[in-house]
Structure formats: C-alpha cells, structure tokens
Image (tube, rainbow, N blue to C red; front, side, top):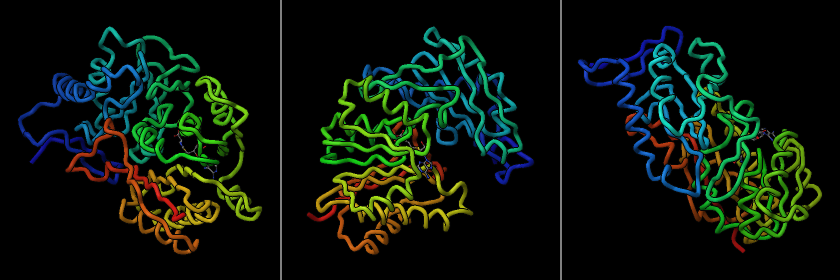
Length: 347
Ligand code: SAH
C-alpha cells in the first residue's frame, strides 16, 4: 500500500512516508519534502515583520515526527519518531544547507519521544551555538527566545495569528493567565489595555515578561506580574471580587493523550467557569486549549457548560486556531491541536 517507518515500541506502529510504493526513502526524498514545506512558507519568509515561524509541521508536512522551527538565522529541530531518527543524517544535511543558516539546534526532549522508545537528545548539530537569548520579531513586536531552555522550541509560534486577531477585543483591565514570557501581555498592552496582570507559575517566564514589556517600549507601571497557580489565583479573585474586562486563558496541555480527556475537560471547565465569574459585563474571555484530544466541538461544549454554571450569557464572537505555518493534513486531523474562542459577555 505504502512505504512507512516501523516503530516497534510505539502505539503508532507505522507512520507512512509515501503512498507511492516505488518512491525510495533516501536523501533526495527528504530534500524534496523539506523544500516543499519551506517553499509553502515563502510569504512568511518574505514578511519583514516576522522572523520566527514553523517550517515543518511533522505529519501535516508529510514528514512524520519532524518539527523544524525558524528563529532568525537559527533552526531548531525535533526528531520525534523512530523514522526521522533513523534518517537523521540525511535530514540534517538538508536543513543545515543555506547561506542564511547560522546554526541548527536540536530540542528532541519531548515526552512523545519517550513513547517512541527514544531518549532525550539536545544540543548544537550544526554551526554556531545559539545565544542564551535570541532576539526575534513577531508581527513587529520584539521578543527574546531561549532556544535551549524555553518551552517547546522556545516560543509559542502557533499563537502568532491569534495574537493579531485578539487585539480588536482587548479593553480595560486585562488578565493574561498562563502568560509564559508575556507574548499576549505585550499584544494586549499595545492594543490599549488600561492595566494588565500577567500570571504564571514560572518566575523565569515572568522575568522575561517584564523584559518584553520594556523591550517593546510599553509602560511597565500599568503591568503587574504575579507568580501563582492560575487555579488558585482565579479563586482568590473570585473571593476578593477582583474583576477584569478581558481575560486571556492559554493553559498548558491538560490532556497529554486521549486517555486523559475526561480529567482535562474538568480542568478546562474549572478555569473557564472561574474566569466567567470574574469578568465584568460586556467583557471578553479569550480562551484556548492546545490538547489534541479535546476537539473543537468538545471545547465549545466545555466553555458553554462553564458559562451556564457561572450564570452568564455569552456569545462566541470569534473562533481561533493554530497559525497557518502549523497546517493540518486532511489525512491527519489529529494535527489540529490548538483551538480558541473569544466569548463576549452580554453587557
Ligand atoms: N500564552 C503563552 C503560552 C502559555 S504556555 C504564550 O503565548 O507564549 C503555558 C504556561 O502556563 C507556561 O508558561 C507554564 O509555566 C504555565 N503554567 C502551567 N501550569 C500552570 C499553573 N497551574 N498555574 C500557572 N501557570 C502555569
């Protein structure tokens, strides 16, 4: 039927490379596939306002298990399946080529790699070691990325388009919950937030948030960073009647696999219910889930249940998804993992 990579330890036994039984899986194969993915991102490459984006999105780009992200002159690669691991050298040769590549860094340190029976592997594979903090540009906003130690490959590139889309809905006092290094905080402040509270459990991420506020010439006195568990922070706000006009909820993946969907659904419902309770009339809740196991339909149901239990009436004014450099193959719907809703309360 096809040619694929067999993975004896994984639940996913075979990942298909090609439906053409005669197509060899060799260096020219990877050359073609990678060139085609990179070519598809030409408009992003030409866009002077952004220099960080995903170049290869694994299954959706027909290279199962391969992630390649671009941060200015650096490439960050993740080999996440036995198949791409076996063809590492051929792939590395292709992705290290190009005058504009200063270095290629590996971040194969995800949990999914363990499920494939592979061990963690990180480090410089080609060229220069990336700096501790690499400056990047996203939609003309400046951020510093820690390629070596940051989440994922350093930055949540999948939210780029949503960051633009939500500017229209920002107003008044804003809460950016699960803020990481403050990308939404910077966007909300430039969109005219009166005040902003950014909450995360990571002190290092909050320090970067403060740095990003300064880097983008925004007013630090309007902004507060709080190191806290978002669940407890929201409860404290509810109990002390602290309210917001706009709330952004961008939690980490609550469901690692479909086996965790029920528990994850409760987590999403809890935070969204609390958020609805502390939202002022006419306010907006901008809420996300990046769990692949939670479908868009289920997510909307969870948010609807949360609104019902919070006793609020709300409209969905926009549905959000992952940026276009994180495409979804029609043959791999599981690739659609990020979903979001902008819900406006009746005023
Ligand atoms: N909105 C961010 C990405 C958020 S990623 C962006 O656009 O860049 C999720 C973040 O949630 C991480 O920074 C992680 O440190 C934080 N986090 C995870 N669990 C948390 C919890 N229970 N309370 C507070 N922060 C948490």
